[in-house]
Length: 297
Image (cartoon, rainbow, N blue to C red; front, side, top):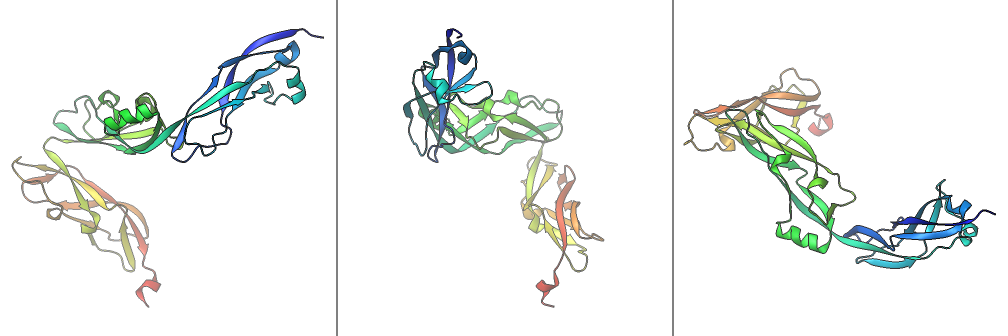
């Protein structure tokens, strides 16, 4: 019969399919000791692939510590039979699941670095999404609250040097979470940072699409806008002029000859004297048939 052998294995802790109470997530899982020695026949010891220990966290709202048997998994991913286990000398371990509270309304604030092209300025920086959900230790959540519940994306992450139009960068928000915080398990790590870059002296006005005049709607058709507002970029000939209000901007679209379907159409914009349009404006529209049932015929 082959000889005996002793080997050390790291204990991997799992929670199987159990989940804590809704406002909590697993912060981390620890085994004490972290690694154990197993003694037994060489043939069996050589079959061991990994050692796991599980902790049940069903409905828990504070840290859970349990003493538990370990499970030994062979190189085919199968659990050792109780007969094989009886030949091994394996100790129990204590496992702890540390629970972190979830905070759902964490804001993201981003800045950018670099200087845009000559004659251009940064109008604003926005992110999509603009709030995220994180879980964290009490200390980390307390520190976050003191930071106004905001995660900051540093300026060096977004470089707009030499740009003369809007730009967007995709970043991994996990890289910027302070120590002791992590995204909740159902969150995406992707955050899009959008930088508005405009000619100097220009501003963005929001015009409600309901204010846009729709001309030449084909018979029996109706036109619906894809968004509630469009952005119109305007430059003043003189800095002392007031900013325009939405009703001073006249906008219209021409639907002549359009059939049913979706279109990206140019918007004709007129602005008062002293102001000029910086760039072309388009809007998405949906043209559909007016169903006869609605007209009462």
